[in-house]
Length: 141
Image (cartoon, rainbow, N blue to C red; front, side, top):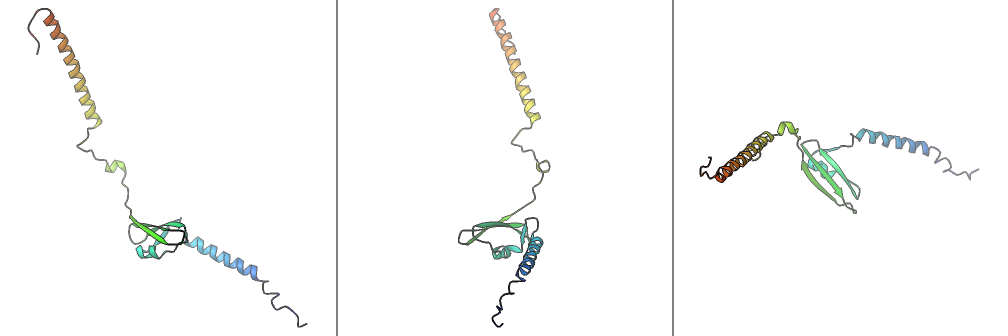
C-alpha cells in the first residue's frame, strides 16, 4: 500500500488553473487595448516601453502633442523617432490667394483683352493694306 504514487493527482486540477490564468490574461489584454493606440507618459515613457525583436510601434504621448515610432532590430536594439503633430485645417479655411498668381476670372479677362487686341490688330492691318493698294498714302491710326 505504501507504493502509491504521490504525484498521481498533481495534474488533476491543472487544466482549470491554466484556464483561469488564460482568462485573466485575456481580460487584462482587453482592458489595456485602447482602439489600437498605445499611450505613454512623455519621452521617458516611450524610451522605457519594451518591444520584442523585429517589431515597431506607434506610441502617443499623453502629456504633449507628440508621438513616437519605436523600432527594434533582430537583436532587440531599440531606436526611436519623435514627431510633433498638429491639427490640419480644412482647405477652405486656409485658402489664401497669393499675389504671385492670377485668379481664373483675371485670366479670362486678360485672355479676352488679348483676343480683342489681336482681332483689332488684324482688322487694322487689312484696312491699311487696302488703302495702300488703292494708291492712298494715308494710314489709319
